[in-house]
Length: 118
Image 1 (spheres, rainbow, N blue to C red):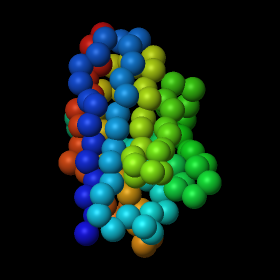
Image 2 (cartoon, helix red, strand yellow):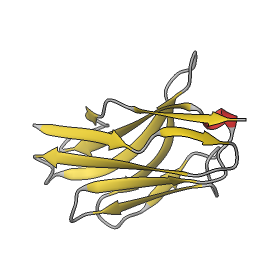
Image 3 (cartoon, rainbow, N blue to C red):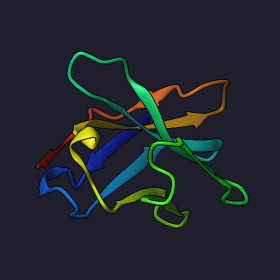
């Protein structure tokens, strides 16, 4: 079994920064990638960023390029999402997901709320 847990959400003013963390525990030895997704009220969940566990290549949605930075700590099985220059459109529940031993993201966290006040 694998558990994924996010932390670090909260309320921030527009232009501010937040750092999200996501730790994966359990049988994580076959981790292929981890990703961040978000879902705003009334909208579908969308891709934010992803990182390949081997090599560390990172991919971003166009909407967050240049503002968000995803990184990983392989020793801690943890990924981070540094979010800068936040705006109201970034308000959403942010989910962390892991792609382990199979196709697609098959393990998801419970989500953490990020609210940006304008």
